[in-house]
Amino acid sequence: MTQERILLVDDEEEIIAFMKDALEREGYQVFTAANGREALELSQLQPELILLDVMMPELDGFETCRRLREFTQCPIVFLSACQSETDRIQGLAAGGDDYLLKPFSLAELKARIHAHLRREKRGLTPQDQSVLRFHSLTIDCKGYTVNGNGQDISLTNKEFKIVELLAMHPGQVFTREQIYEKLWGWDAEGDDATVTEHIKKIRAKFAACIPDRTYIQTVWGIGYKWEVK
Image 1 (tube, rainbow, N blue to C red):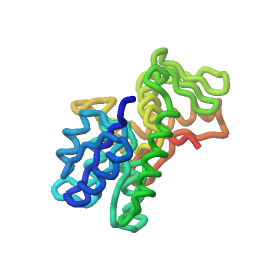
Image 2: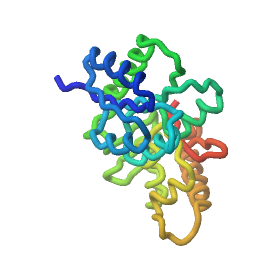
Image 3: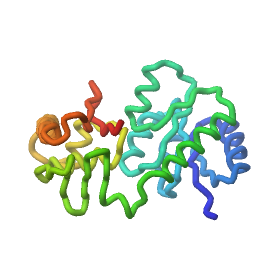
Image 4: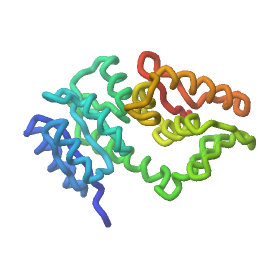
């Protein structure tokens, strides 16, 4: 049976040693990084879950998470002594899946890890990801088609790419700048305001077929995310 891989990122050596030992006793394969830059390098080992400290020198946890989310889809759990609601919101907006306050018990940490890994196993397999289904909405990524309540929804190429990007990362917040750079490219002429216009058109087309749900949610002051509740 393949061991599930966990990447543990914290600049405190004692915490790293303690948590690594505890998680290895649970049967996990644990990689450790002392800062954000090491975490970005070790993410190439494709961990199933990342435990990420917030307060680190040079590259803090929030910025590390944002960079990880450019190529990593696994659950990211923040570990932090910062208890303010603003910090928790910032962590989730950066692409985190959970926020665990220090000090925490090992029992709680293990329970959170187990819950996230179990949720991932229940999710889509790589083979399934060509077709995404959300309630009455179906997105065929290979066929470039979208269907809502049995009706085909006609999208332009860029509109489809925006839907695909957000739907492939449900709950993750993307800024307008990130969406523009990913889909139009760094050297494109224009600005990220065009993303807002495209999303308005997508919402109007969705509403015509699925009036009771709004899949693309605005995160005020930050950007957009795919909401499946």
